Amino acid sequence: MRYNFDKFDRNTINSLGFPYDYHSMMHYDETAFGNGRVTITTKDPSKQKIIGRAQGFSTMDIQQINAMYNCKGGGNPPTGPPTAPPTAGPTISPTVQCKVGQDLDERCVGWANTGYCKTTDRNYLEIMKRKCCKSCQDTCNDKDANCAKWAQSGECQKNPNWMLQNCSKSCFKCN
Image (cartoon, rainbow, N blue to C red; front, side, top):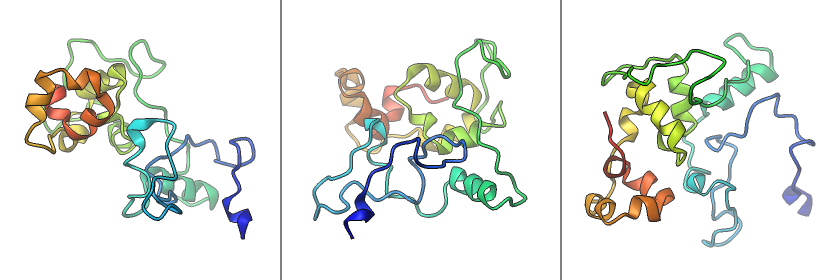
């Protein structure tokens, strides 16, 4: 059954035009096949703890299923992540700021589900903070009581991948 572990490049698989989805329920977790040891690593380290933890279909899983089986309900590949102005789509003035509980772009939910509320790319993060207050509000919290202390000592810059996942409130303004 070794063929079950064959790797395929992006040209071999038909992703139906969809980008790679770390939130897909099709992922094994990082310790699959390793008896507790990490055997699967993500190219983007900030996504390492995301794989294999889906509790159901991701937004993109549903879109791909709809596209594959020509179901009503969509199937168009999602638009890309938010981009810093200028963009081909709607732009936002640097002075515009969403209010708590408000999204200024209909794509916010999809972007949030794809992980852009906690991205390590500061350009995307700034756009998300200004456009997607509602979709990102639940993701802005500290998971450890020491987060504020660590942030003050510079850990947000020294260890951004871990800090952003676990101490996002202390590392970034969440409003």
